[in-house]
Length: 581
Image (cartoon, rainbow, N blue to C red; front, side):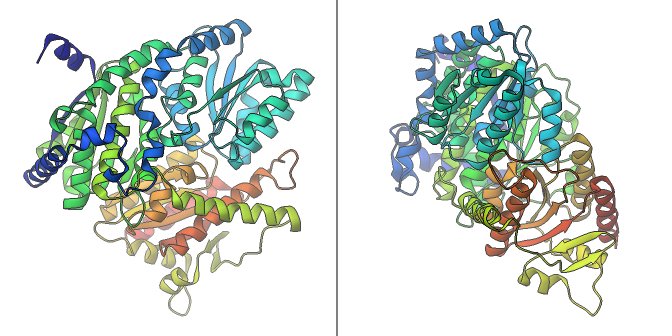
């Protein structure tokens, strides 16, 4: 190895893997086949036949984006200088999925920078969550970044309507100067930004899908806007880009990771990718979840990412997982002993070590390559999301109907007891409500008993994403994890609809789902619309459940009413009784 190449190797995130013999053999065979077919060169030449030979070549703009961004890095510096000079206290990003998850990682990882605004992200239609965010900011000192690739995504558009009106109340006709937009050229949002007098408009790249857009303007405008050194970030990322061009998969960190994930799933059924991130970079898992699930989970195939799951002793796991530990080197991470125990027990463990926070860009690119490679091995198109679109269609039908009739269609619970209502479709009802007098506890127990070896259990919560609700749901999750010894996932709606929801509906039919909804204690109007944010959230939950049912998923909806804290405690008690039965 030349001294220059050795230096580059030292500067990229380290990557090692401890694999059991059967997986090591499968990975070695996969790599040999990949290399003999010249597949890395085919990937970089944008050869659609590497996947399903449909439209994949139209979605590979992310391969070259780092050099393009470096060539135009002066515009990010100009934005950072302008924002610092204007003295904004907050930069509030209004987006969903690929437009929001990467900026959220930046905001939570780096925190507020001196002289620049604190970066906050809104990706929920929950009225209580929106109100809490509104109370946290002063619109007169906030810069809003409306981020939507298509410009037609429901959530960013109604966020914009709400916060534009709130800003107008404070600054009048200068409201537009408090807004910037990131969208694809010619989108509906571009037209709105121009007509409302937004201060800046930034364009995405048409050939980059949302979940691969972290290194495009969708990620870098917020990165620069919060005062980070975008040029340094891109230069460090470019080292990984070059490393991922290596033709030998064993020396290519992106391809090497992708062959492990793909071979594990296809050849050994290890399709649960369990993500463990150091405390300083804990939010990275939320971005990785979307990339893996939305890219690979379709046609009954795919990888199921598992993020922020409590770690067990090695005996608590089956043979359906690959563990990926992403460690920030300066952290004293309390999770390290558990990871070492998993390695010792023979579970597959991949270790990625970031030397500094600016290496996050390297991680983004390594995983984008890995996901594209895994998608090729699984045999799907990793750049579309058919089941996400299905949920959007149902939601749109419901909100459009509300505009006409003033209400959502009436619902009848299959069971109501102790202030909790249960809803499900006929097939699931027939499986769960058997016997003469079904009870709430009995139905929950039967639902949990449907979880079998190799399955995973999903908590899909349409609740405010507040820490206390997250903690309560994590306790429920831990009960199920320990009792059933299967992978568990937790998502807050509607954000997971633009992320992991694709895999839950289109991936392997190994998920058992408990959707959790509530009544709105205090709803919030959407300016210029008849529907409210609460109506939108309810429509999204119904659309989500309908597509789960249409895909013959094992799913049950628990409706808590208005008192979420009390409802979650009841649910915790019901789950505890069910798993201890």
